[in-house]
Image (cartoon, rainbow, N blue to C red; front, top):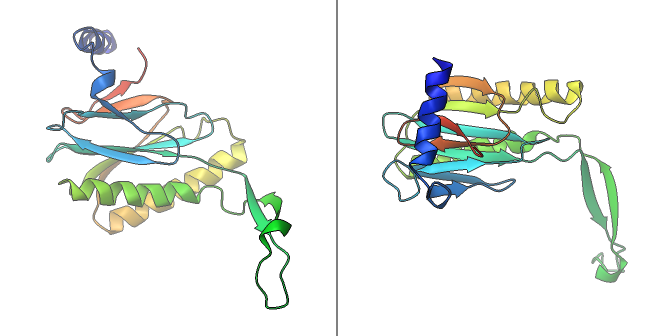
Amino acid sequence: MQGELYLEVFDMFKNNPDLEARTKFVPMSLVEVTSATDGKPYVGTTSLASCAGIAIYDAEHKVGGVAHAFFNEKESIVVYMRDAQGRAIPSSGRAIVRDNPRPFEPFAYLAGALIRKADEIGGKKYKFMAFNVQHGCRTPAQNEQLKVVVDRTIDTLRQAGKISDFEYRHEQAFRLDTRTGVILPYFF
C-alpha cells in the first residue's frame, strides 16, 4: 500500500510541473487559505525546525489552510528614559532581552486566525493537523509545553464546534491539496 501511494504521489508531481506555481506558500508566523476551485489549490510551508505547522481541511467544502507558528524563547523589550512630563525619549531607547514566559502562544493565536480566514471562504468544520510538535529542534521540556498548548487549542476549537478530527504529524515541510485533502511532501 505504501509503495502504491508513493507511485501515485510521484505521478502527481511528474504530471504537474507547475505545482510550485499552483501553491500558496506560507512564510513564518503567517497563515494562508485556499480552496479546490482556486487557481492555487495547494497551500504549504517548509522549514519547521523549531517551529510547528498547522493544516486544516474541510472535506465537504474543499477548503483548507496552513499556518507556520514561530516560537521565540527570548523577547526583546525596549526601555526609554522619560522626560519630566512622563514622555518617552526616543534617543534613550535600549533593548532588554529576557526569557519569553509564553513562547508557544503563537500556536493558539495562529490556529484561531487560520480557522477565521478559512471560514471567510466557505469552510465550516475542519480536520486539524499539527506538525512537528514533538520532534522539532527543541528540548523535550519545550516539546511537552508545546503539546499542552496544542491540546488546549484543540479542546477550545472542539468546544466551538470547529474541529471534526485531529491528528499529530511529523513532517517539517508539506503542502495540502485542497482538492483531495492529501498532505504531500513540499519537496520531492
